[in-house]
Amino acid sequence: MAKVIEVDIGKCMACKACELACAVEHSSSRDMHKIVKEGERPGYRINVEAYGRNAVPINCKHCEEPACVAACPTGAVHRDKAGEPVIVDQERCIGCHMCVMACPFGVIIVSTDGKGVLKCDMCIERLERGEEPACVNACPTGSLKFMDEEDANRAKRMKVAEQMVSAKEQQ
Image (spheres, rainbow, N blue to C red):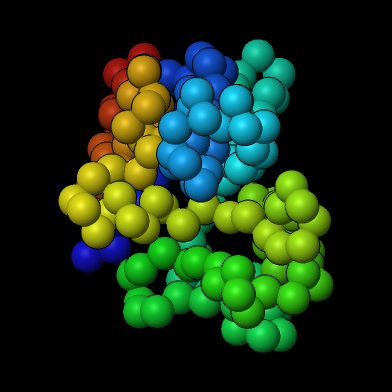
């Protein structure tokens, strides 16, 4: 069963711990002190955007039929198997940015050196070790949760049911 990163914007306090954890996880040293000391700019793959009075963490949705995969002329942006994350093979990436333009969520960005792209890979190495993605692990409020897709959908249905019952009771 596919796993997804679910966002509860009501809990996000815009601390950006998820962005920082993502950048550290995707750095060459994976050590904050070394990143700062060596001046590395690893880039992050989740963005906390402000919308009105809300903070909204936005990351790759790893779509079932990803536009970024279809747009990539070299196959650098790909998925190995159904239900797995959409990833970028930097060796095959030619820096054309077609995936950036094709992504409907705006979550694929140009790398800091301008030669490739960055996107959420759900911290695939962490997943292989049985760990959660770094952004989820770092979130102090539980705004980000890593869960089975069906469990996430069930929780959404329950929330809608609760709202409908509450509205009926107020009538």
